[in-house]
Image 1 (cartoon, rainbow over the protein chains, first blue to last red):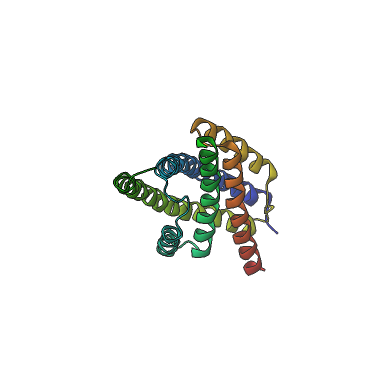
Image 2: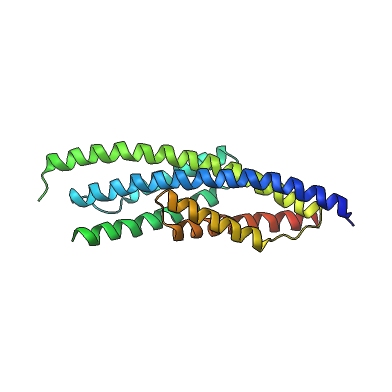
Length: 103
Length: 103
């Protein structure tokens, strides 16, 4: 049984960690915004130069690279791969919009 | 019709942007690793102090905050909310593992 005083102390510690999480989330949002600026450029470049929208070889390299980085950072490589898939799905949605607008 | 020379130039430009994307992805992986270190601490703190695993009020605040940040960063707020959901689903999986190990 945990005392009310102990729980109070735990809640204070929780608040401290949550401030770090909020800072980290702000960093993630701004970095993601920059990533989508880059992929927006990629989409426009591909559309303007009749380059294929998808590039499976590039994607395979990215997966391998991120899995290795995740391993080095003590992050689950499976999660890193799912994360990349999540981001790329959004990029494809953006690119489809660019292609539809340029048609 | 785009000439081979133009396509070649586009491919060089593409390579340049992809290097930026790779740098950004490295940053994302390391920052995510730090975020999971924080949420690991949160999970242990909650388990040790009999605090409830989920906190809907905190989650609502995070969603509102990230949507506002996304708006400021010119990122789709819907995407930011989905992104947070994606990360939190992984955090919950980690916390369930911590709870199972401490039982």
